[in-house]
Image (cartoon, rainbow, N blue to C red; front, side):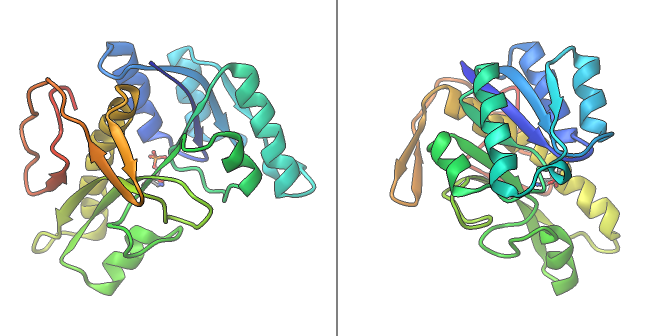
Amino acid sequence: MLNAAILASGNGSNAQRMFDLTAAGTLSMNIRLVLCNRPGARVLERARQAGLPSLCLDHTTFPDREHFDRAMIAAIREAGADTIVLAGFMRMLTPEFLHAFPGRVINIHPALLPSFPGVHGSADANAYGVKISGCTVHFVDEIMDHGAVIAQAAVPHLDGEDADALQQRIHTMEHRIYPQALQWLAENRLVLEGRHIRLLPGNRPLATPPDNALVWPPLEAGF
Ligand code: GRF
């Protein structure tokens, strides 16, 4: 069972999906804290509605990144969380933060890394004119959008589809691969070999493959 702090800055649809799957018992994760850096962000309301502990630390009220991250470390430890789930958290983390939770910080990025890292990954991929976009769940290291890849979903651009519709289909895949990756972590099935992650076999049946998308490793039932 993971003891997680979910860090988010905005809407929180990925966080919401985790709230739902933990409540359903599909995802073996205690959500100890929902931590947000933007007052008024929708994710805070979502946490309140789900009855989960939440905290807003407004980064603009701290003198620098180091002080902000130290306050986050303290709050996360106090809440009893040891796994950090970044779900649309729009702040770079300091090395001090990463050292506080070694190998336990995970992120989702709305592009197929290593292509299109950065805050506008999805829009950049679209502007470039790629035929296949997607999303990536990865461990976090000190370089932005760079850590070892856990899972990816490739989402092809459909003829005549506008950017919003494409964005939505990528988001839908985020909502599937992120909880699945966390469940693999909860089951201790992710073995890190250098930059490569080997997934140990499980015994759940596989889910129906998503339409028009390729997910690797394959999703299991419930995700
Ligand atoms: C997602 O696109 C995620 O890939 C990126 O931030 C966005 C968060 O969306 N890191 P939401 O707040 O979970 O809806």
